[in-house]
Image (tube, rainbow, N blue to C red):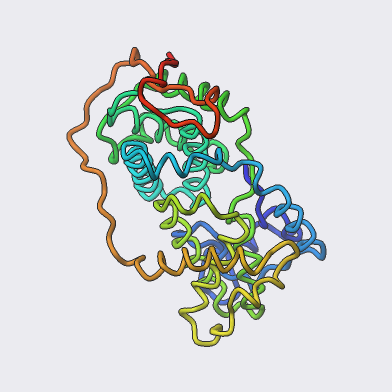
Length: 325
C-alpha cells in the first residue's frame, strides 16, 4: 500500500481512533476516508524527516516524459484517459472506497497507458483497463473487497468475467514491474493539515476538502506534471483559502511544513488546484452508461506496446504493430 502518515502515528488504542472527544463519532470521515479530527492525534518526532524521505522518492512512479504530450496531441488517447478516470471515480463513490484507492488506480492506469495504446477505439477496452487498475488498487488499500463482478455492478456499461480481469491484471503488473506501493498526496495530507492548523479546529474540513480537490484534479492531465507533496500542500492551501482564520496560509508559508518542499513547485500546483477548487461544484459530464452487456472471457487485449519506441518519436498508427494478447 502507499506510504501514509497513518503509518507514522504514535501507538494508540484502536478504539480511541473511532471516538473523538468532541462527540463527533467516528474518528474517520466517511466521505474522504481520512482522519476527522487531527487534534486527537500526535505525530512522532521524526515525522518531518520521514516525509522528507518520501519527497526524495516521490518521482519513482511517474509516467514516461512523453505521455502528457501524447495525451494533448492524440485526441483518442485523451478521451480514453478521461473515460477511464471517470469510471474509476464513479466506482469509487459507488463502493465508498478510500480516496487513495482511486488515486492509485489512476496512477496504475496512467503508467500502463504510457507504455501501451488501445489499437482500436473501443469503449470496452477502456473500461476493462479501468476495472483492472481499480481491482489492483482496492487490494492494496481496502479492507472490505467486493468480488470482481460486484466491483462492476451499478457503474458499468460492460461486465467482464473475472478471468478476463485477472489476465489483464498480470499484464498491468508486469508493465509496472510490480511496483504498486508509492508516495501519493495522501501520504502528506494529514500532516500538512496539522501544520496549517495546529489546534486542529478545522483539520477535519481541511483533510476532507483537500481530498475532494485532489480527486477532482485526476480529471486534468496537467496533474501529471506535479509531485505528490506539492499537490498535497496545494490542496491544503486551497482548502485553507475558504477559512478566514487560515487566510495567511500560502505557498510561501507552506514551504516550512517539510524539508524538501519548494515554493515554486507548490505555487505551480496551487494554481492548478485553485482552478479546480473554483470549479469543483460544477458537475462533470459522465460517460454515457448504456444497458449492461456481458463480455465473454475470450476477449483480446488490443493494446500496442510503446516501450520499444524512443521517447521523442511520434505515435503514428502504422507504428502500433505489437499486439498484446
